[in-house]
Image (tube, rainbow, N blue to C red):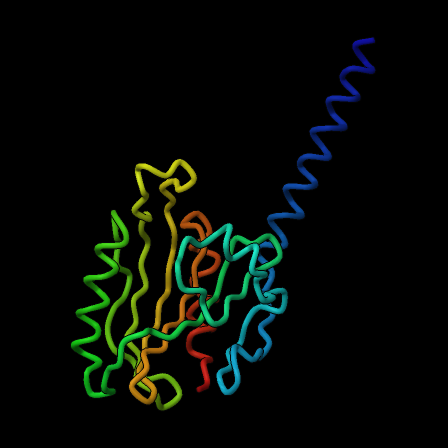
Length: 192
């Protein structure tokens, strides 16, 4: 009986090791990016497996009164890329002022913010405000559904015809080292 027990245990250990090795190998594979239309004239290189989120997925994952214009996610719904437009009007010359405004907003919305990069950069002949950071989401203490989560975020803001365009790439902080280079490629690929 002990030989059978040992064989069964060895079988499960080997299966577990094999599954772990396959998962590790798939995480180390190069992510293939393909150009996808975000909306009308806006496109970006996104991972091949990204797809638009359903309304039900949006409602379950994001507690917001304004539905984003476009939101994409990967197959296991751990990584998101989104686009939205702010309700306030700004001039393209006000990017520096807008940067201060959004930095303050980030500090109010999140806790334990570790800023990885911030500034104004030109991407494909368009200036963008860049914020890349790791943080925790402030939770509503009266709402048991919302729990504090550490997240990696890469945000871009720009102004087009007095509208603020907002692009975000978000994933759990535990996946940051894998996804941050991909987030950089996605954001640098934006075409308006």
